[in-house]
Image (tube, rainbow, N blue to C red; front, side, top):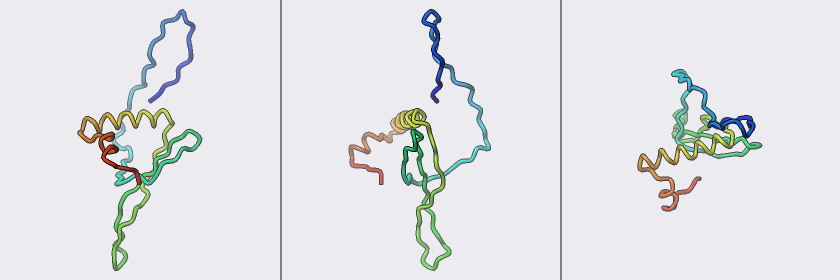
Length: 108
């Protein structure tokens, strides 16, 4: 989370901005996605469109379809924070994004 602060006179000591407390909501909706359908930059707001593989059993020959299950809209600063945190987490889990890209992994 990025916090904007007002500049203060140079005579006052400069302190780092503090984040407001996090309120954990156990009833917040949760989205499960099996893929990323796409990305967009809408006037500085980064939008991630999430998809999930779903099987349509109403047909005689069921087929798997990609269904949009949600969108996440982030400020550019929040998107950068998400990328940095996600990369760090994946590295810690042994799922290095940079090694995957070096091996030829691409976004489709």
